[in-house]
Length: 196
Image (cartoon, rainbow, N blue to C red; front, side):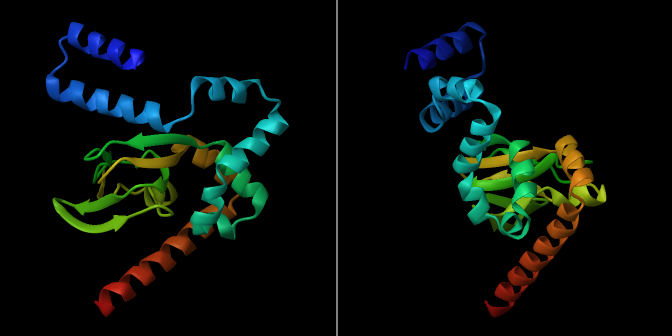
């Protein structure tokens, strides 16, 4: 609570517009109540690398089971990817990817929450926990084809573009598996739309 009061005071002193202040405060309160404490972060830094790896894999166990890509890749490859990822939280209404950008900025794996896919202003799909996006611009180097916008608070793990390049140089099968999984997901989505 004290940190939130300090943040409010700071925003007030800097004359931050009320709408921006509200977003910052909402985000801060949400992340402080839903993320690891400082003590846990300190502990992770102090652990030996082998033990830290075990903890990271244990904490990210949901990624192994939720995301089809990870179920299909060899465990050492998955561990290499997870070790290079970082958590990101998107606020409701936040655009994570902008249509037409040179790059999505990374490969995003949704661990909690929902995003909507927009082409122009039209919502064309929703993605949920277990889905991923950003792979097309990373694999093909093409501009992004849609906006990706958070519907609610969305927890994601992101593999930055530079890390993606590093991983795929060492594990080239990741690119092929991404294409395969995405193609299969698109086929399933097409079938579901045809049945409706």
